[in-house]
Length: 426
Image (cartoon, rainbow, N blue to C red; front, top):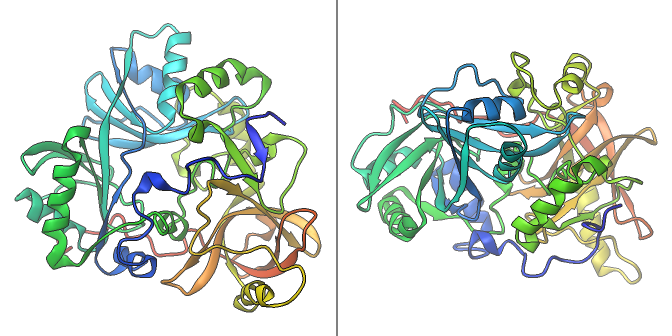
């Protein structure tokens, strides 16, 4: 296994989600209700952005992305997914078309796109940018943004963006909704971040806005089923044919983002066991075979005959309580379950069994205060994926005390998806 992937069991120095701001602002339970009852503001400005410009920019992204580029309007955004030749996800992110030949790619995918740009014969320039990225999400998010901007945003379609003016700054408002609710990402020059952030907080006071702290910032991804790199899968960059890219990636990225830590009961002999395809992550609808792209052949076969798909697991309350109860007994206790989510930056992957047979791997375990349940995402065999199927999660590191926790297969997303709700009545 490559040295960049550590089988636990140390915490990346300086991690603990400091990128999201304070751990809590009110408290994590209060904040976790914000995107169902009111709205929140969260800061994702740590994401990387890269600008691509030139007559071959659309062709570049068509060649390296599973998504179709046949229809891509200016002012539109796509959840762009990049795979290796085996159809496993390398990176993914939001690709926005900001001009006829100009695109902005948010996320680690910018490094892969630039690498492919330099290796191919593309008439495209590329340079990093530095934008803030504020999420405002929840049923009252529209009212908050409209008050801060003094203009309507109800005419912005899903995965579309428009220019708004907040606190004297012209910025983009992208309608997205990473909490599975009505939501926007506000994007603009990093120097304007504090002005825009404070204006949103002030405008949101009458709408009970909450600042989203680090402890609960990823619970929305769990409830709404947005699998995340490092948390739910490892990027497919550790094979021999990716050595050149991996070297560049490590040089370009800070240490916390280029070192990957694995934990949990799942174990395997090769790092590829922690790779995932778009099909396994629940992104099949993004895959379009109207163009040639890296990984197409592998994905054509998998889409036609998927082996594993994405589901939610609902863990047994009784068994979870027993894990905590073991802390009050003498002797070796079960591994602690941090709530609402583990904060250490691991890919926490646990075995899922049925009748003693491995049938899946579960990740993103977390406590939903809204549902009052422990839930997780699960890449599970199609044959065991029927809603209501009873399975067992193996909790605890190999070589330590382990517990079989009963769980029930449930839909993914677990929370109703309201991202595309009608904004006219919002």
